[in-house]
Image (cartoon, rainbow, N blue to C red; front, top):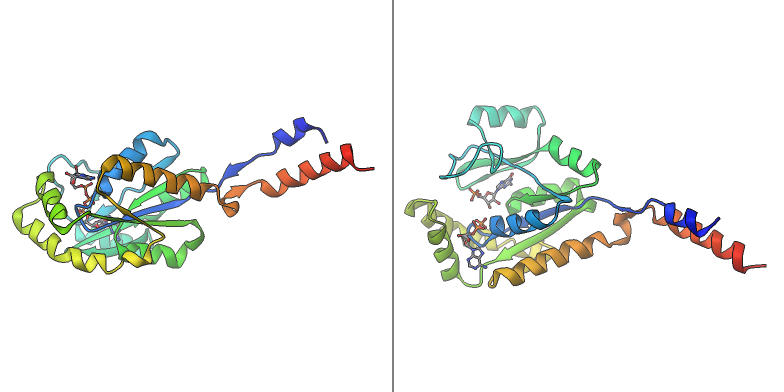
Length: 223
Ligand code: ADP
Ligand code: 5GP
């Protein structure tokens, strides 16, 4: 066995299911966009929802906007990997694109709530990495919902009312980022994904890699 054959061993990383959750307005979508822009190996899981599109939202890019009937039919047909009711609307993750991306060696990014995260934890624990984004203060959260300027005052108030309930689930997550400075949060998020990819169980081909190295060492250096 030569060092050439050593380098031919296929070392790849198994895909991660990377979940971001937070109270609405804490910065999940903003951080997701930054991550997706710089990491071409990560694919966003586009959720389905029964809520109406916000100004500028595009069907098939931000969400698949479905009627309640169509959404329910997809649940009944087993097409949803997870789903939940959030703020009176249904949201869910279409199953097939997630597994196709993972099979192709990609990481998959999910912007989903705690209910969906619990469901993924029950079915795909080994692949899952859960990050909870906290706003720096309650006031900042409210200001961000206003500054996003995409929801009515009623919707913003209902999301602020729901925020405390969302926060109850922070301790179910593997990592917590307090999203004060956006650049710092982006750096932390990238560091988490990078470290998770180095985990032994996620590096495929290691057994062969080490075995080939041992053979080479024995052949060259042992009597
Ligand atoms: P979420 O997806 O969690 O609902 P968004 O990503 O839409 O939240 O962010 C809500 C608003 O807050 C947006 O206007 C966004 O530009 C702003 N925002 C996000 N992160 C920060 C930050 N660290 N500092 C200041 N504003 C932020
Ligand atoms: P928004 O209406 O602000 O886009 O999303 C509202 C909430 O629904 C957010 O907390 C978001 O993470 C959550 N959400 C979006 N898509 C999904 C999904 O596919 N499944 C679940 N469980 N929650 C989702």
